[in-house]
Length: 396
Ligand SMILES: [Ca+2]
Ligand SMILES: [Ca+2]
Ligand SMILES: [Ca+2]
Image (cartoon, rainbow, N blue to C red; front, side, top):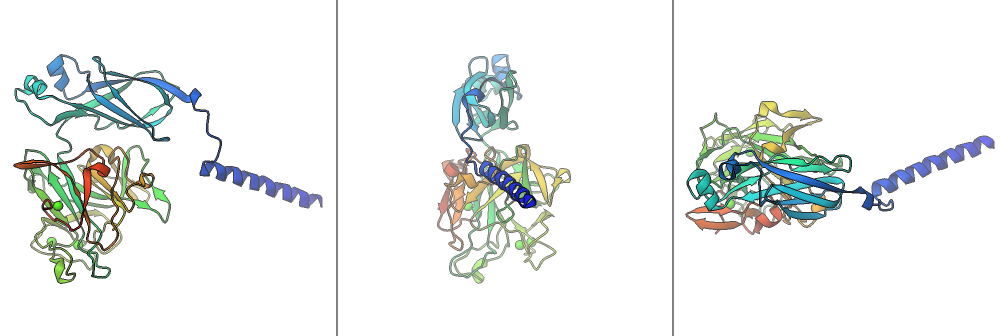
């Protein structure tokens, strides 16, 4: 009898432990007392490009706009830096914060700095995008800002992933389109296209990783540095298969004139000999390059692939190497389901069902000879859904 009581009390103990554990996981604990965790900080913005120094004789960045967003609660605050490049943050809860710092240069400032009134130049915090505010330290946080011309020089301008209507489960006509946003010739050679990894089945999602993209599908453009130029305002089409898909699926698209094609040489894949192939660095499964129809993420990165970091059955690409990243969700309002870090893409496009032939393309800001597409690193506002794909061009 005594033994049975002992067993029962042990079981109750385990049960209490389990319930406790679960309630913590489910977040039903009473809300923590936040007032004692409020912290105050100074952030100092410093320009590493030399631009501010050449204009004002100091590298501090005045009149910059800084937005911080709490990881835990999603609270967002916006500040303006003072004449010493300082932002005083007070009364925020200690947490990880996503930080966006921007300083648009005026044409007058650019005349002083470079002699020409270049527009579309800004300073931004390219590397330090996530910072922890905690009560333990009082040192001012220094954020280094770098100059970028325009937004990202190369951006993902369209993702077509849904598959055509009326052809059963035909899904070989997917593509990603890259756009040169600058007024200079750039080179695609060795740039990385990676599919952001997550697994709903395994419950793996690395959206909160503070440093790295996780990927199990990493391909690069061919070339040795200057073999594959992309002209200012040019669209580059990278097709899953560079064929005229209308032959097999009447409502699909003609991708036979694609600029590049993903060809998986260890699989029964199609190789159009006229179209250069993307080089597979890592993708151990599947018969072709494949992006998910309704929910996924793609990044374009500039990274030496021999420096890829292995992790579990994946490889890691640092956020600092990412030129552009775009996420799409079946329900783009459900940003709690994001898989791509908010520092890369603050939102998501999408809302497209399988086999509808719909596509996602960036909005056009201006078209004075050369197109400028919207790139606020927020696909919720940067993209629109097209009823039909526009491979290698801007939709009409
Ligand atoms: Ca292929
Ligand atoms: Ca080929
Ligand atoms: Ca397009």
